Amino acid sequence: MLSLHEVMPHLRSDIYFLKFSNKKNDAGEKNMTVLVVAEHDSTSFKSATLHAVTAGSELFLLGSGEVHLLVVGQQAADAAIAATQVAGVARVIYAEGESLAHEMVDNVAVQVLVVARHCSHILLPATAWGELIAARVAALLDVALVSNVSGIFSLDAFERINESGHTFMIRRNCDAIKVLTVRTNDFHAAGQWGAATIEGVKAIENPLAMISKFSGNRVTIGMDVSLCTG
Image (cartoon, rainbow, N blue to C red):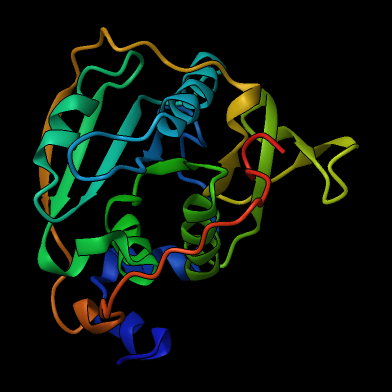
């Protein structure tokens, strides 16, 4: 298994650039896309994704570029096709490959980097999966993660709930690419009457595909409070 330090030199130069450049382009954030990463089960996307898309649409209304929805996985074409119907999404980006099976955190995070070149914001639902992916993406980009976002005031100012779960605060973030996780109970679910285009992109290849390997599932049933609604 390769470490992330071993993997990064193998990324394309334009993606490697993201980690070490924290400068905005000449146009600033305006017209740079908002990328929402979909959580899905290969046949359909999970409802938390619809709430993250609504947050992305709010950024669009504040002056960002189009909202794009990224679907990654193996044999997840049904989920990608369903995603084209989400209201507010201009384009669905679908990456399929063996390395993306089971949505393993490290591999998905690297795939996000591959399509994040012209993004101003990367959004994920504040689920357990979304928080893991977002943390890894933020680390690879060397930017701060803004988690548990409950409101959007501008392209760089966000309301979020603190760790105690009781106090809301405004967090300003000036990173070139902002990585956010979105509380689903604070944004309504996007409708499903859209007509987005769909674009296929190449999945990450070796040695990137060797970052993580799937060995099996183990499900533990507990009474934990959802990160989205707690």
